[in-house]
Image (cartoon, rainbow, N blue to C red; front, side, top):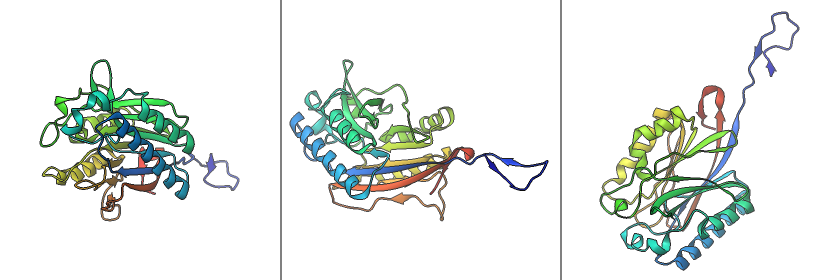
Length: 282
């Protein structure tokens, strides 16, 4: 507790302690090479983990590493027809590689993969805790079926939300098309107390690209949460954005720079003040 005044008084006022929770986050836009076999997928993931390790070694430790939707494979029908070899269980080779990254860096890792189960395939975000354990799995609830997106032809929708607790924050992943469904983000924030939404997607620069950022800003503001909206990088991609709970001229959304680099990593430090029941920009 902290005292409002240190002078002796019979009417001493005691103010509640103002707690804050810091979170350092490494958001990683990544390019995805051709992945038509398990060996190509595994080589890509191992190289990706090595690049992230290099960034952290050079810039310093972080609490959380986030990667985009389906970051282990290409996106689209050409890859999806090979899900029999590209999809993998939650404890498969990609999970093992990112678990080793978590152990080496002491960071929680959230990454996307095509997950295989006895029921079928899911577009999933796995949560790997600091010890390398699979702490949770979120399956995309709202699949996309227009343009180059043919997800309903290959994947099943998820049916439940997922959270992770880290440094006093409640973190909830959502995936790509989920952001267009306001009830999901509202439920996560209002009913489950999420303070940071990790919106991981695959956004190609087609006719729908321009609406993505409007959804990202709106979901952050209407729910008073921080939101990372993370895309992959490469020809036709990029454009990731980070939104604070309040967006105006003094607190604008922060956009990734356009780049052709295979890994574009962006470090953020967030401060959460639970007394105000929302996150506050640092």
